[in-house]
Length: 242
Ligand code: GLP
Image (cartoon, rainbow, N blue to C red; front, side, top):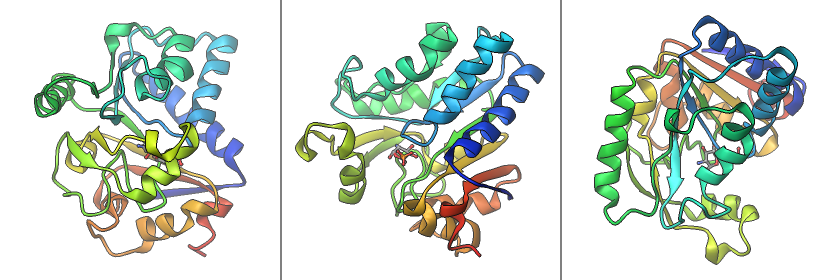
């Protein structure tokens, strides 16, 4: 694991953008694994700014997202589909058919999991997977207890995760109880992984990820066994590692 400790959220976002932009320059048709949540928003803004200034092209990039809430139509303002369109796909003008996100409102969620896993397989290896981390150590929506070898599946969200994500919804009752997520096994097949973490709320999870026992109780701890992982953390998120 390569650990890069930075001052704050802004520096984390800039460093992550440097890595991602370099990847896109080296391979304009790279497969990017993308994440949602507050953590990658700064990175996405940096990519948009760079594109405006330097004209980096994303027209041949292919993307796969980690997860989607079950029960939200894709047009819902809280769906990860809407999040990605607003924060990244539209501003970077990535062609619609190059972007992939699980569908959270089909009639058969199991079939959707299979379909999504096959899409990822058909793209070959994910060249660079971006990850945030939940304060309980979840990656994607792989909550504690998720199998290290799992592929795309349905997950019951922990109450703490629903509480943490409630800030985006009118009330906690509106936060979906389930999601479709790429499995830890799927994530681990990526060629390279870039995990971002900022703020005190992530410090415990980051300590476990870097120094803790490798256990399904802390899903991100499996990253210790991946051959090409970079973790960019700000001082607060790293504070329990010193
Ligand atoms: C959600 C997402 C994760 C994300 C996590 C942390 O649960 N499914 O992919 O990493 O939240 O979110 P945030 O970056 O907002 O702290």
